[in-house]
View 1 (tube, one colour):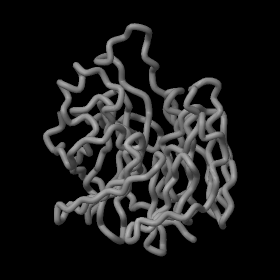
View 2 (cartoon, one colour):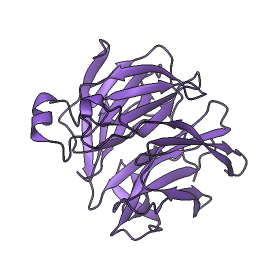
View 3 (cartoon, one colour):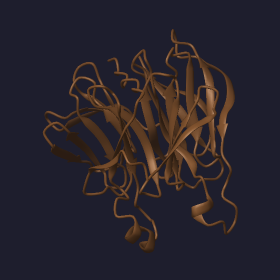
Length: 299
């Protein structure tokens, strides 16, 4: 394991996701999807709190007015952490019995992009949506498990992954209107062969974040590692983790040099959990290159 890796938060989540370092509050938010809970940690004071919901929160983003944007199974919401009240902005654009929102982030212009997960897993009916100017529109599709949203340092490339397909895609991104074009494979990973032990499997791409050198950090679910990829898709660094299923990294701290990594323990074998007590916890790693701050949602 990396010597600089620390255990940041306990107790563990079932499925921690969408870590977000709030640029104004200087605190960490993240979701426990099946736990139906949003968490908040102030590392400076050690104080933490959480909010429970009737349905699964999947991703969270900061907003200009001090509220949060929450993508949940039952739609897109404005959530006020000061009051605990949520106001629905958009109904779910899918059948929530079979699909839900998953990975979501704001682009540099403040549009909120959210992908979905098609829970039956086949056929690939998940899609990518964008909340812009009070309208939720479908922007891309043809995948099963939407993840990996991030933007390049110049804001002209958008990354998006399909975890089931073991692939990360890149698009040419138009900052003016959020237009996507030139979809291509940025990185592709070997699938697990039948009966292949997990120790020999590199994992599949889940959530991601971009640092100030334009490198793409991606959590490799079931691969027990986070990878740093160059802007051309080359693996520059692999960080071994004490949990089999990392889900997403984000950069935080005042200098944006702490890489927070959410992990999962839901549906994992009892033997594995006994050997990996930090499964489901938030991990933290100090890095040399700072990350990009979280983009803020516009009204």
